[in-house]
Amino acid sequence: MARNLEPSCKQCRREGEKLFLKGSRCETDKCAMERRSYPPGEHGRGRIKETEYLLQLREKQKAKRIYGVLERQFRRYYGKASRQQGITGENLLYLLETRLDNVVYRGGLASSRQDARQLVRHGHVMVNGRKVNIPSYELRVGDVVELKEKSRDLVRVIQAVRAAEGRPVAPWLKVDLEKRRVEVLSRPRREDIDVPVKEHLIVELYSK
Image (cartoon, rainbow, N blue to C red; front, top):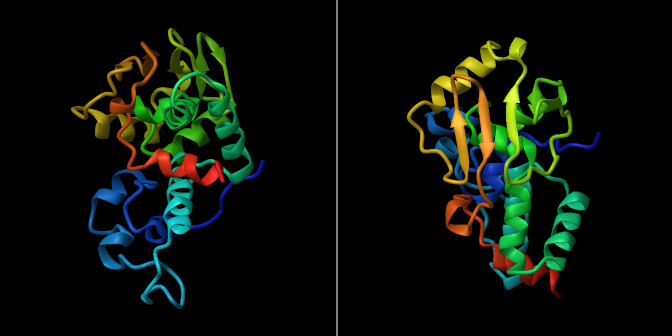
């Protein structure tokens, strides 16, 4: 299975902002963005000419890195979003938000999307009572995501749940941390998605 092996902190530095790829670590002084906020590489501190294409490319790369999606898969998401009714950029974010790994993370059952992907791949997650080990599995309204009973007391899960207590919950989700359970209540609206992505720039990039 193809995956991005680039260090998470370098990805944040490349985009010039925190993408919270390492969960709670990104909120501490250990975060690389706190110590080296410039892009990685030999010419990281040099001046970069911000062209229109560069801004569009950076938004696409940012979205890919936040959700942990590679180029070919991201292009498929865009193609599907463009064929749906409504605003293409918002459709794209909707498809990314309703991925199984993202909902596990949003529900507070994992400390980061990367951790959520690992939980899913290792068979700890069920959807509507059936095991699903595909991180990109598309959830629909009414679907219930929960951890297997034997997986609910894993150390990583307990730590994630403790960190999620008191944290605002996405309004399109119903979360029961005690039961390790997340239900999809509705389709997420753009104002419900807090990712720092300007999706219209991604649409402009692919429309060329």
